[in-house]
Amino acid sequence: MTDLKNIKLHYLFFENNTSVAVNLSAYCSKMLVLINYEYVRHTIDEWKSHKQTLLAQNICNPTLPYMTIDGKYYGKTASILRFLSHKLNKYEGSNDDEVQLLDAYTDSIMDWSTRWMDSNFDFFNEKMIKKYNEEMSPQFHKTFDTALSNTPGPFLLGEAITYPDFALYHIMEDDTHVKFDVKALPNLATFVEAIRNRPNLKTYLATDRL
Ligand SMILES: N[C@@H](CCC(=O)N[C@@H](CS)C(=O)NCC(=O)O)C(=O)O
Image 1 (cartoon, rainbow, N blue to C red):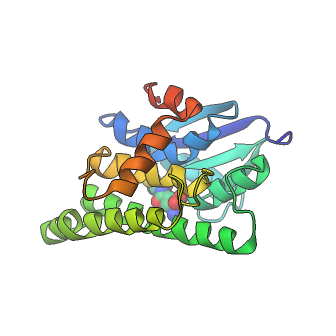
Image 2 (tube, rainbow, N blue to C red):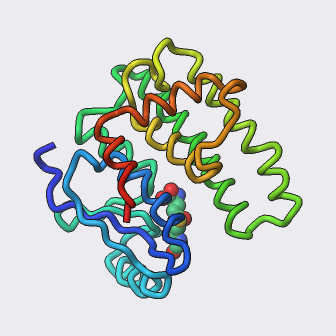
C-alpha cells in the first residue's frame, strides 16, 4: 500500500447531470475511501482534447475513469479495481478459484453496467429500453441474488467483502437507486444492508460524493 501515493482519479463532469457522473466514478471511489486521492473532473469538451494528449503519450484507448499513481496512467474500471485490490492486499480472492470467480462476477457486473448505460444514454431504441427495464435488469438482480445465496455471508464471497461487491452495489445505485423487491430478492437485501453498514462506506455514502 506504501507505493499508492499521489493518486488522481479522473472522470467526466456532466454539467446538467452531476449525479450520474458521481455515480459512475464510484466504482473506483468506493474503494479509494481508504486512500487519499484527488478527484479530477473533465467536461466533455475538455475531455476531447485531454484524450488527444493521452493518445500522444501512447496511452492505448484512453477512457474515463482512469487513474494516475505518481503520474503513471492506469485505465479501465474493472482492471483498476483488481489492481487496487492487489496493491491494497485487500478485497481479493485467497486462492486461484476465488480469484477467477471474482473476475467472472466483475465481468457480469460490467456487462450489466454497459447495458444500463446503453439504455440510459439513448443508444438503444424504445424497444430495447423496455427490454432492459422489464427483462435484463430484473434478470441481473435475480442472477446476483442467486450468486449471493451460494455463500453463508452477506457478500459475494461470504463474510469477506471483495472488489466486485463495490461494483455490484454501484450498478444497483445506477440502475434503480437500490430499489427492488426485498422479499423476492432477500440475499440482495442482506447484501445492501451489509454494504451500508460498513463504517467507511457509511460515511462515504452520506457525502455528496462530488
Ligand atoms: N470499459 C471501459 C469503458 C469506459 C468508458 O466507455 N467510459 C466513457 C465514460 S462512462 C468514456 O470515457 N467516454 C469517452 C470516450 O470514450 O472518449 C471501462 O469500464 O472503464
